[in-house]
Amino acid sequence: DIQMTQSPSSLSASVGDRVTITCRASQSISNYLNWYQQKPGKAPKLLIYAASSLRSGFPSRFSGSGSGTDFTLTISSLQPEDFATYYCQQSYNTQYTFGQGTKLEIK
Amino acid sequence: QLLLQESGPGLVKPSETLSLACTVSGGSISDSTYYWVWIRQPPGKGLEWIGSIHYSGNTHYNPSLKSRVSISVDTSKSHFSLRLSSMTAADTAVYYCARHPYGSGRNWFDPWGQGTLVTVSS
Image 1 (tube, each protein chain N blue to C red):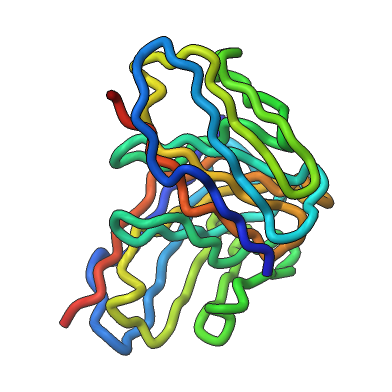
Image 2 (cartoon, rainbow over the protein chains, first blue to last red):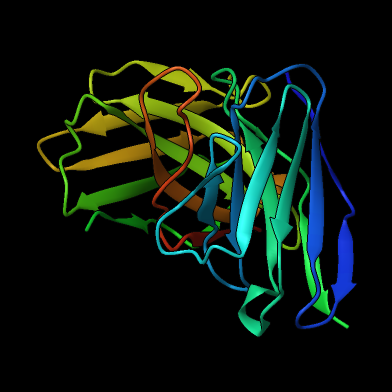
C-alpha cells in the first residue's frame, strides 16, 4: 500500500503566521491527494481535493500544491479557527491511506 | 444537503461482531456516481479507511481488515452497514461513515457523518 508521511507531526504558531504542512507519498500519486481539517470531537471535513482545489466554504487563505510524491498545505495567515489537526489522504488507488496528522496549536 | 448518521452499539465484547449502520438522507444512496465508506479513528490517533461500497454491491476493503470486515447496502432503507468480526480492544475507535465520488483519483471523502464511538470491553 501507499504510505503517507506528514511533517511536522505538531506545530505551534501564532495568529497571523504563515504555516506550511508537508505530505509525502511513498510512490508517485499524480495529484490524487486530499487534505482534511479536524477539530476536537468533530468529524474531519474535506478542505482541499485533487492537491489544489479548495472545497467551497473554506477561505482562500488555505491553499494546496504539489504533484508526484510531495505536497504542501499552506495557510497564509492563521486565524483562531484554524487551530485543528490536518490530515492528507491519497486517492491514487482504492486502498486509501491517510497521513498520521499534523496538530496545529496556538503558540 | 446530504446527511449521514451512524447508529449502533457503543459497547461490544471482545470476540464479538460489531454491526453499525449509516443512514443517508438528503440524497440517493443509489446514485451511481458515488461510493459509501467506513473510516475509523482510535482515540487520540489517526484515520484508517475500512472499506467502500457502491450501491451495485461492488466493494473495496482495507487489506489489513479484509478477513474480518463486510460492508453491505440496503437501498430500500437508504442505509449501508458495517460488520467487523472478532473484535478486540484494538478496534476501539470512533467509526465514521462518509461518501466519495466514483472515478479514478477522485476519491475524496465528503461529507462525513458525526461518528460513533465503539468501545470493546468485557
